[in-house]
Length: 199
Ligand SMILES: CC(C)(COP(=O)(O)OP(=O)(O)OC[C@H]1O[C@@H](n2cnc3c(N)ncnc32)[C@H](O)[C@@H]1OP(=O)(O)O)[C@@H](O)C(=O)NCCC(=O)NCCS
Image (cartoon, rainbow, N blue to C red; front, side, top):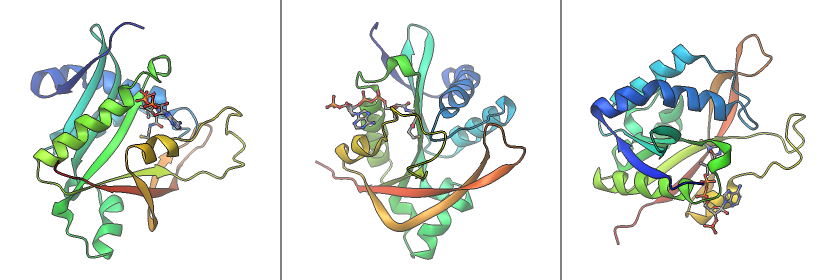
C-alpha cells in the first residue's frame, strides 16, 4: 500500500471532495453492521450541512489524489435533535461536548493506522475548539443478526483502546433505509464517550 496522506479539508478543497465523501459513506456503510442503502443526493446534502456547522471538521485520507477515507467531527450542540436529546435530558452542558460523526475507510486501506489518525486529528480539533468531552454513537445489532458475516470483528476493542467506553442507558435512535427495505426504520444507537485531557 502506498503512503496515505491525512488532510483536514476546508473551503474549496472540501467543496471539491464532498461528492467523493458522499460516495465513500454509501460504499462503506453498505456493509454490516450498517447495511445502509444510501442515496447520493441525500448524502451530498447531509455531508454539506455537517461541514457547514461552525467548528466542524472533515478529515480526508488520500492515496495520491483519490480520497479513500473520511472522518467528521462537530460541536454536539450543532447536531440533530435525535443525537442531542439524550444529553439534554441528562442536563448536560452541550457546549462542553464534541460529537464524532463517522469514520469510513475503504476496506483495503484498513489496519495501517488511518483510523487511529482520524481519532487523533478529531480529538486535537475538539480540544482546540474548547471541548472537554467527546461522544459518538454506534448501531447496536443483535449478536445473532442474520446478515452478520462470520468473520465480522466489532470495533469495540478499537474504540476502547482509544479511551472510549459505552455509557449504560445513553442511547438514541437514528433512522435509515436498509438494503432490501422499502422504508426507513429507526435503529438503536449506543453512545460511547471520553473525557479529553489537556496534556
Ligand atoms: C473504523 C475504521 C476507519 C478503522 O480504521 P483502520 O485504519 O483500519 O484502524 P487502525 O489501523 O487505525 O487500527 C488501529 C488499531 O486498532 C486495532 N483495530 C482495528 N480494528 C479493530 C477491531 N475491529 N477490533 C479491535 N481492534 C481493532 C488495530 O489492530 C490497530 O491496533 P494497533 O494500534 O495495536 O496496531 C475502519 O475499520 C472502517 O472504515 N470501518 C467501517 C466503517 C465503520 O464501522 N466506522 C465506524 C463507525 S462510524
